Image (tube, rainbow, N blue to C red; front, side):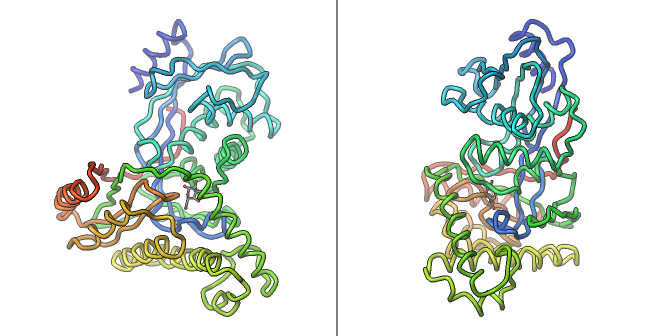
Length: 388
Ligand code: GLA
C-alpha cells in the first residue's frame, strides 16, 4: 500500500521527495455502548483495518486532499485562510475539520500541506472510519509541524472536538480515543468521566472476534444519535434534583431504581436505564475477561444487545436478524450490535471451530431474509495511529 500511496502522491504533486507515511486504525467496541457521553466506561479495541496517509508540507496557504477510495472526486482544495465546512469538500471536511480544530486550540499552521489517503474500513459501518481519519490527520499535523506538546490523548480530544463542532455529530470520546491509543492484542478499559484507562489483554483461547457488517445504514443516524444524547442529558438533570451525581455513570443500578421516578417521561427513563446498566455491565465484563470467564463476558454482550434494542432503541431489523441468527448457533459465546447503531455491524465472539459455520450459515440466511449479502471480518486487534 505504501508504494501505491507514494506513486499517487508523485502523480498528483510532481514528486514524492520528503513525503511521510502514516496509519490510523478503525475500532470495534466490545461492550459499553452509548455510555461514553454519559460518563460511563467503554471497552473498545483498535483494528488492523484502517486509513493510510501520505503527507508533505507546502510552501503556500493551500491544503490538498485526495482519497484513493474516491478517485472520481479528484484533488479537493481548501485554504488555511478560510477554515470553514463546505459541502463540496465532501469527505475532506473530516481532515479539514481537524486543521480548524488545531487552530481553535492555538495551533495555527504557517503553511498548507498535501495529503493522499487510502483506507479499508467500510464506510458508515460503525467501525469509525471518520475517527480514524480525524486522528490520522492529527498525527500528520503533529508530526509535519513539530507540535510536540500534543499527546495522543490530546489528538483524540481534538478529533472529537472537530467532529462535534465542525462536522455536527455530537459524539463522545470513545472512537477517537480507541483509534489514538489502541494496543495490539489489547482492549482499552476507559473511564470516560476521567479519561483514566487500562489495557486489558484480549485472550480468548479457542475463540475469535467476528464482525458482521449488515451493510445497511439508516438515514438520520446523526440526528437520532444527537437526540439520544439529549434525552440522557435531560434525564440526568431530572435525577440531579433528587440525587447528587455528575453523570449517569455515577449511578449503580440500585440507586437508579430508587430515584428513577424523578425522570418523568417513560422513554427518557428507558434511555437512562440503559446508560446506567450498560456501564455496570461493562465493568463486570472486563472483570470477567480478566478472570478468564469468556462465557460470562458473552452473556453480558447479549444483555447489552437486548438493552440497546429495547431500552435505547438504536438497533434495527437487519441487525436484530444478524444477532438472532448468531444467538441460535452453537459455538457463539456472545453477539451484539456495536457502534452508534441504526445499522452498521455486530460483534460476536465465536469458537474457532464454529467460525466457518457462522459465516456460511448466517451469510446465507441473512441474504434470504434481507435480500443482500452481509460481510464478515475476523478481527485482529492492532496498534493505535502512528507514523510508519
Ligand atoms: C458512536 C460515537 C461514540 C459512541 C458510540 C456509541 O460511535 O462516535 O462516541 O457514543 O457511537 O457507543
